[in-house]
Image 1 (cartoon, rainbow, N blue to C red):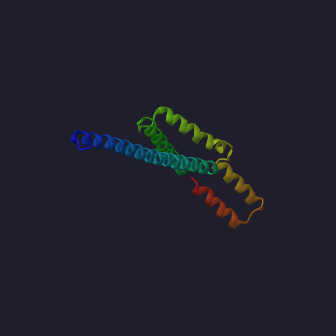
Image 2 (image 1 turned 180 degrees about the vertical axis):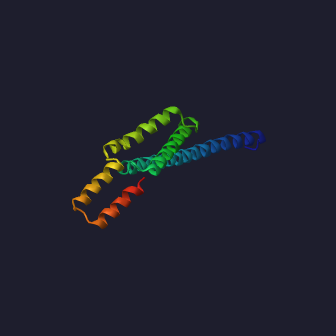
Image 3 (image 1 turned 90 degrees about the horizontal axis):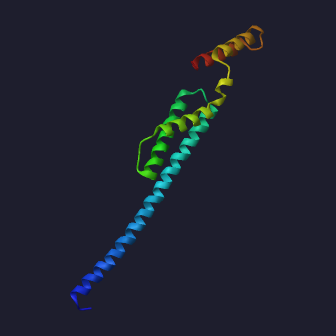
Length: 143
């Protein structure tokens, strides 16, 4: 082992092994971190979709859901093939999700219909004047 060439070969050999092990450990940590980021983005998107289902006429929730969906799509593409851009396919998928979450909107009465119903209840004295004014203002604030 007094041969300098043998010592250099051993150093290179064990250094290479150490470097390969270090790279494997680091890449495993990066992969684990990427999975956590992707999972968090997915959970945020699903939570936003659930909020939209509960309030399908709220434009702010709809925009937030779309933004979170785009972020989730971007992260998915980045981690799977290095492409950060959101494609037309992603946009169609997101709009399908959002439209499904808002599917019951068409069944809701319009503001005009709600005001007419409220007026009828007031004329028939089924609600007080104070209740009428309060509910009327709430409906008008949705515009």
